[in-house]
Image (tube, rainbow, N blue to C red; front, side, top):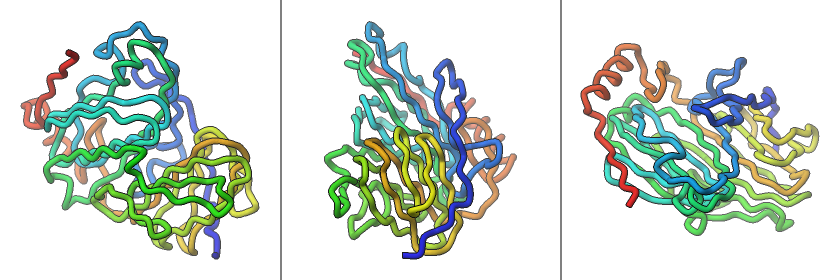
Length: 291
């Protein structure tokens, strides 16, 4: 395999999101987005317990025009939305929501974690939608750890969950608006594997909690986002410890991107329309039931 060259390594920055301090590799002051990926947030905390679910997490809020995705690594996240979907996904699982024309949803720690405490860790990333898909009906796709196809390295030290796209003849069950390959990796020290990627895809590698050696030559630390040049067949990874990582690869959409908070469209006019539609209640309503 001819390895892709590393274009840049970005260190995550710590940002305050509504009182929660998280690691943010994307956007970075030197990189607004990597088409079609708009944002990556890494949230890790220990819930103290003794709380009511309705008072923790992120309450009802809107989205339009893109796909917010959560890879859960520890704990559980309770999803509710204005289309009637409700599910709790635990470590190893994925919540994939195509916001389309519009949706209101909430993201809160599972009830038992809010009440009894426990570790919670997840990655949320945003994927842009092509203009032809931005105003489609919203949809929600939950995926459990057990339902995620797995590929194991020859040395038995890497397990790769295939969420979307096809990897080593395993096809991820998630339906996407544009061609993607999204993988979640569980690693033990010394685990090695080649990861082929279509040459025209943009590619991000992000380790959560351990270092990796990339292409047998460069060592990166946990919470470093690695962006690669296009071309060639893929990358090689070697885990320097026990931990997790993600691979986000996708075909560039190559359309204008105009965003404002939870709305991602192609023009300022469309953003203004999204704000107006939300204020008029056209994106739906969500009344959470905590019974």
